[in-house]
Length: 89
Image (cartoon, rainbow, N blue to C red; front, top):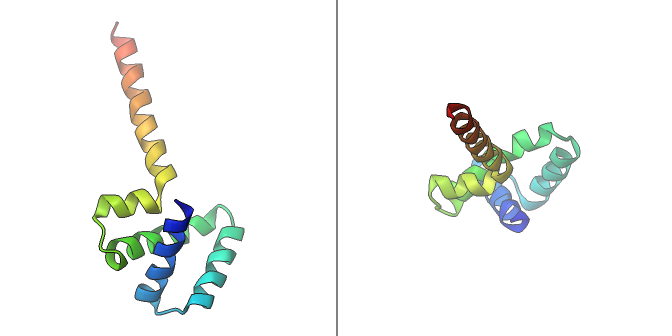
């Protein structure tokens, strides 16, 4: 998964910003050192690279760009659903 995210990030920075390889790697390292706000920068760039660079569907690009965020949303929906069913009894 990380390799796909890195490839999509590099593709996104090349298409979106016109950056070269080394500048993209440097910005990626700085963004990952600046936790947790660095991920807020890399998520849209990874999405853009996967969506428009790799020509993937929007949901495939979103799964690669933010898998943890999507997993948290799905688990929260399941948790609320189980709680709702449990309270109805």
